[in-house]
Amino acid sequence: MVKIFKDILKDKDKWLQSEKGSEFEDRFESALKKDGYGRLLVCDYKKILSHIKKNILDKESTDFIENTFTSGDLKKAFFCQPYGSQQYSDFLVLTEKFIK
Image 1 (tube, rainbow, N blue to C red):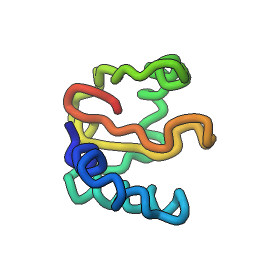
Image 2: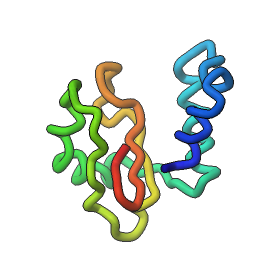
Image 3: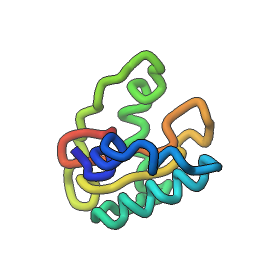
Image 4: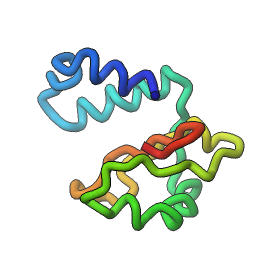
């Protein structure tokens, strides 16, 4: 599991003290970068989204999505607001095995 998710589970109060969602997002992004994750640009993740869109848009799904894009920088990366809407995930994190 990515270190940040362990930290959130361990110290929920610290992570929930943000007054604005943007503060939480900034801290989340900083923590990912400290752990070696790189932010992907729009042109880099359009291909990924076309393959996983159905799974991402399924509001009932709680399953991790298998990361089949494990070459190069795509095994330790993230992108923000892929759909530009509050109805969907603000962050998608690509690990060696899953997209979380």
